[in-house]
Amino acid sequence: MKKLIVLLVALLLAVSLPVTGTAAGTTQFSDVPQSKHFAEAVYELAGRNIIGGYPDGTFKPGNPITRGQAAAIIAKMLELDTDQVKNPGFKDVSPENGYYKAIAALAEKEIIGGYEDGRFGPNDPIKRGQMASILVKAFDLPRYAVEDKDNPFKDVKNYSYVSHSQNILIIYHLGITTGTSPTTFSPNASITRGQAAKLLKAAEESKPQMKTLQASEFGWEKIEWFNDGEKNPGVFKAALVTGRKTPAGYTGDRLQIVPLKEGTGTLSFGEGNIYFPDEKNFKKYYVHVKKTDGEWSVSLEETDDHFPTAAGLEMTQEQTKQVEQVSLSTMEGEPLSDSVAFKYCKKGMMDNLCIDIDKPGQYIATVRYKGGEKNRYGIEVTEKTAHFYYGIRTLQERTSHSVDLSNDSYYSVKPGHKIGKHIIPQDSEQIAVVTREKDTNIFRAEAKKGGNFIVEFPDDRVKVYSDGHVFFEGIAIDVQQLGNIVYVTVRPYLHDYWM
Image (cartoon, rainbow, N blue to C red; front, side, top):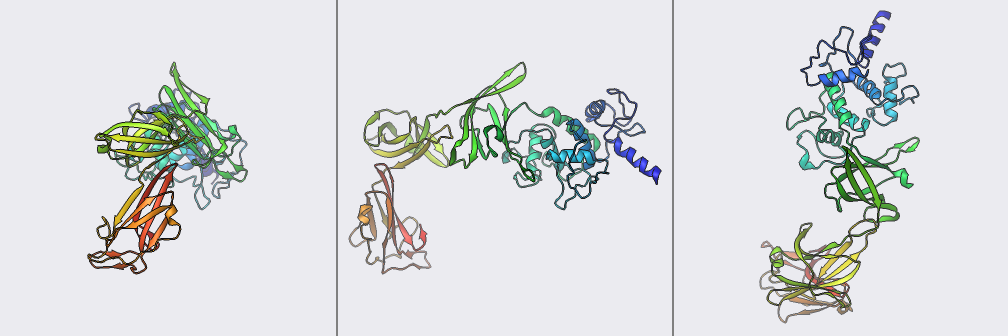
C-alpha cells in the first residue's frame, strides 16, 4: 500500500513539474514531436518549470487534464503565493490533497469556483467551457460583451446568465482558441494536456495592453454603468468587471479600457442609475490613445463638455426631400437663425429631419416645404451632466385633430349607426374644445394646453359585432405640450383600454 501511495504522488506531481534532472529549455518528450500544433507551448511551459512529463519520458498530450491539474499549472504561471492560503471550503479538497494549495490560492483570487453542491471536483476532467472562464479570470482578459452577430457557435447562447458563454466568446474573439467546428464550440467536451498547454500559452500572450480603473480610486464601492460609445471612432472599448459579495465584504468593481487604435474617444461612468446618475458619483473623460514603439498608452482627461446634439423632427424620408428651409427661434419667439443646416436621419425606428442644437433651452423650429407649406416643432434641450450629449425632446405642432367613428382607419361603428348623445367633462375646454359635426360621428378637438380627458357616450356601450364593428364608450382627448407647442390626438375610447 505504501508503495502504491508513493507512485500516485509521483504521478500527480508529474502533471505540473518537469522531469527531474532535465534542464530548462532542453526538455524533449518522445510523444511530442515539433510538428504537433501544441509542441511549442508544451516545450516553452516545460522550460519554465510550469509543466512536466512522466518518468518514462512522455508527456501524454492526449490524456485529459483534470481541474486539479489545471489549478496547479495556472497557480505556477501566475506565480501565486501557495504557502499562505485560506481553506476554500470545498468538501472534497482537504489540506492533504496534492492540489489543495493551488486550488485555495486560485479560489481566494476568485479565479476558480466549485459546484453548487459544495464540491470542487479536483479529479474531474476540465471542460472547454470551464477552461474559458478560468482563462478569462486568471489572465484578466477584457470582458467587453460580444454581440450576437459575432457569435458563430450554435451551442453557445450569448446570454450573461448562461454559464461560461460570455467567456467562451471572449477567448474566441481574442484568437486564443477556435471551435471544434466552424459552428460549434463543444463547451462540455474535455480538454487534453496538449490542448491545455496551447490554450494557457495563448491566453498569457493574448492579453491586450489596457488601463484598469478601480471603483475604490473614486471612493466608490461599485461602478454600475458606463458609456464608451457617445463619441468613439473605434479608439477603445470599455468593459466592466463586477465584484462579488464575500464574507469579508464586496470585492469592488473595476473598469477595463482596451486600446484599439490611436485617437480620442469619450467615456463616462459612475454609480447609480445611468439615466438618473448621482450628481457627484460619476466621471466624464476624453480617452486619448497613442502607440509608441509598439506600446499602447491610454491617458484620461476629465471634462464637463457637451457636444452639439441632433434634434429629430419626425417626418418621412420623402417629406425631408421637400424641405426648403429650417429656421430656429427661442420658445418666446426671438429669432436665432433663418437657415439652419439639416439632414435626413433615423433616431431609433423613426425617420427624422435632424438639426444640431448646442445649448440647453426650449426652441421652436419652423420647417418650410417647397410649395409654401410649413410645420412647427417644439424642441427641449436638457443638460445630462453625466453624458456628453444633451437630452432632446421634440414635439410637432398639431392644434387640431378629428376622428370619424363611422370611418376610422382601425375601428368604426356598425354601418348606419349614429352615436347618441355625448358628455363633455366640465372645465375640459381649458385643455381642448371638442365639437361634433351635425348629424355625424365626426368629433374634432382644438387644443389649448397639455392634459387629457374622456368624452363619454352614455347611450352606446361596447358591443362587438361579427363583422368587426364596435360601439365605443367615448373618445379620448390627449394634448401634449412643450413650451408653446401643443399636439392633440383624438382616439376612440374603451373602458380601461386606450386605443
